[in-house]
Length: 129
Image (cartoon, helix red, strand yellow):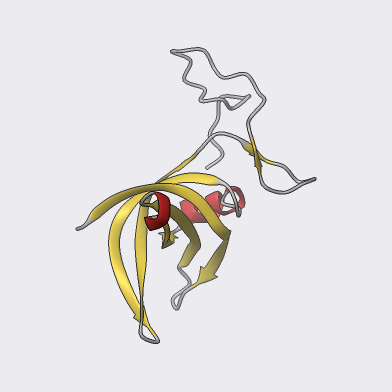
């Protein structure tokens, strides 16, 4: 296993696909900046999460959102190009909330939970997935 953790911006909204046999996979892309100055470039990672957990997360994985992803790194070839892929094990949504009126990502304006409070910022203390 080639474990990797990346943090970046979601490049396209997550989409749920049904595979042969009925299993579902949630797919999205993440852009990560690499280098500085004139040597700065963007690396794109194709992310895939299998099962119900990915299905429930899909609504939160929207273009422009910030996310940290951990999983197994691999590559795939298509029409002479090599693509970096991650079979996702863990996803962390980074602060902020999606603004419907202007698009893009805005800083979160809700107060944070005090230290030691295990509600993780959810009003009723539950995690949505």
